[in-house]
Structure formats: C-alpha cells, structure tokens
Image (cartoon, rainbow, N blue to C red):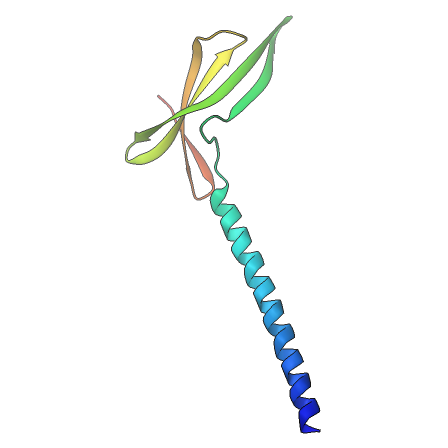
Length: 105
C-alpha cells in the first residue's frame, strides 16, 4: 500500500512541476516579447494617402536614424511626399514604458 501511495505522490509532484514549468515558460515568453516590442525600429516604413480637394498625395514615413535628446535615446522619422526625395517633415520620438513621446520643435 505504501508503494502505491509513493507512486501516486510522485505522479502528482511530476504533474505539478510540469505545470509550474509550463506557466513559468509562458510568463517568461510574454516578458521577452514585451521587451522586444519596439516602436519605429530603424528601417520601419509607413505609407498613407492624403487628399485635398481632387488632389491625392501619398506620404511615406521612414524611421531613419537614432539621436539623443535631453539624455534620452530617440528616433528620427522623416516624412516624404509622393516620389520626392526631399524631406517634407521630420519627427523626433522616443519610447518609454509602452508610451511614445513626440518632440515638437
């Protein structure tokens, strides 16, 4: 009888340790993914349409480089209009604790 109880106890412990390992793996995986979510990594691109009256324009925004503003690591995003190589607008942003900050200048 004692041998059966020990076997059952070992099975229960094994199930609990497998379950605990699974839960810890999932939590660790979510933390790793949360830390890897980065807004506007260098090379990221966005396209959008903009219409004024009958004229329609295609805007293209590119995350092109890094900079430091007030001691914070920031990204420089440049906006281009249609097929022009001229920068129409420049944005400086930073990400901190899941929030995006925009420097207006």
